[in-house]
Length: 105
Image (tube, rainbow, N blue to C red; front, side):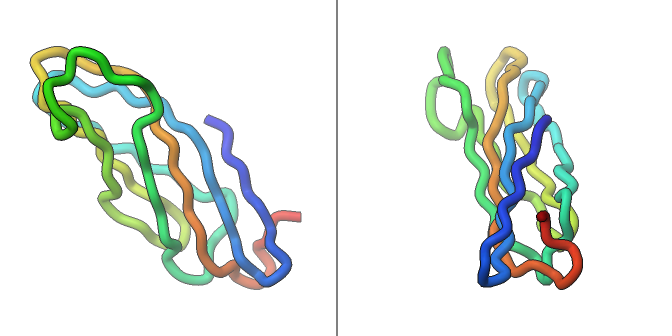
């Protein structure tokens, strides 16, 4: 899906986007988001489910979290602890220092 990159005048780099997910019942799926521009060091990241969730008994029945972060990619896992498959999307954001020569213009 589309990715937004913002160049901050103090060399702060922000990348964000929305990704679709599909996960089987009682399972998880992993998604790799490759940043359009490399960060100087591993950025601070956040992820949250985007869509409203129905027929889920508690907050831990369907959740997304960050599995790993590097200067070039973010890996997100979506866990589904329900008895039916789930589809939807999640928002993600990465904020960190930009490496010289790789800033978006």
